[in-house]
Length: 114
Ligand SMILES: [Zn+2]
Image (cartoon, rainbow, N blue to C red; front, side, top):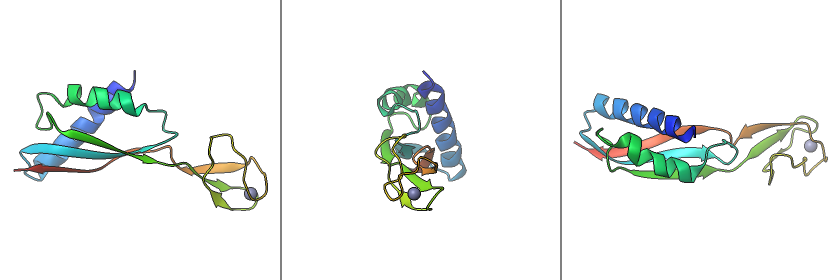
């Protein structure tokens, strides 16, 4: 379950940033999670309170923004939102494309008080 180590990274990043900004307690963390990021949102929701426990982010709410897939066709350069990872270009039918969005996971913001 790599969500646990991802959750640890999220917690570490947020705690470090919060400290730097003088925040004493983090109440909410917002992350962006691509639909093709190979990360299970429910597992992440389950792991976060565990990795956040005993840190200043303990009890913080985890908000997960799902990022839809976006692809760029290498044949006709159209940008489109493929319904699945293997869907062809809707303009020219080509399967040659790059996924340009939807695989990332990043911390967007956090809020707290202090
Ligand atoms: Zn195309």
